[in-house]
Image (cartoon, rainbow, N blue to C red; front, top):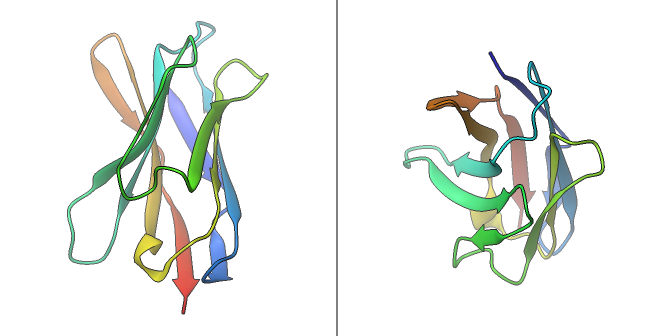
Length: 115
């Protein structure tokens, strides 16, 4: 079993920045990929960004150039640096990974961007 815990959410104004972190426990092996998804009220959950164990990244078009995902020195920790935040970035952000065919999700952290 892999457990994921997110941190770093909060309330900011448009144009400001936030950094989210996610730490995975329950495995000693480097996870093949880690990702951030988000879900706004009344909308489907969507992929925001993902990073593989070798550092390859993928971003949603809506955040490219503003958000940066990175694997930290701690083997199974991932961060999401979010710059120039917009009100439409308001959502619950979830950390996600997959191990041995099973998806794992964190409980989520709220990000609210006021205009």
